[in-house]
Image (tube, rainbow, N blue to C red; front, side, top):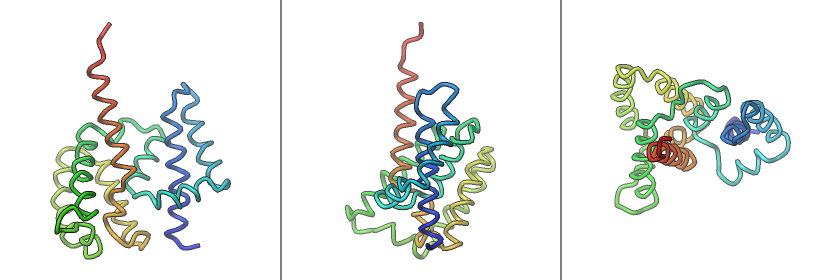
Amino acid sequence: MTASALYGWLAQALVFGAVLTLLPLGRWRRPAGFIGAAIATPSGLAAALHGFFGAPSATLLAVALWSLLGSSPSPLSKTAAGCIVAVGAVFYPLALGLGAFDPYGLGYQPWPLLGVLAIAAPALWRAGRIEWLLILAGGLAAYALGIFANLWDALIDPLLVALAIGALLKRGSKQKAPQP
């Protein structure tokens, strides 16, 4: 089994476990997440998820691990979720051929993309978003180790964008809820 396939298989198990922590299980949320991740790994569920969705980005894996470990606050703040949705809204239509420019190709020759990340890193540092510096460093490390052939795949994926949209919708519904 290649490192990329092993990563995809284990990462999907952890993402599955993190999804279970979103269920309203009270104090059993965290244990259910870990049990779900453990069950998904040997059962073939993780392999099926990997086959259907592909390998999750290192960013999605980091957010899933954050959720499983119960670290607070979540790295998926309103600003972070908005940035992920904005990048996905521009990136995916262009990558799917909606324009003459294909940004996905930049991930194979990633110097321009690395330049943007080099500009973003000091801004994240000044904003005190150390967790996002670590998450991006993890994505860069996964790319450098050859787990991902394209830097974009290490940084973003459709499931991460869907999660960010869900986080924004959840925050929006909390703000609109009447106060008793």
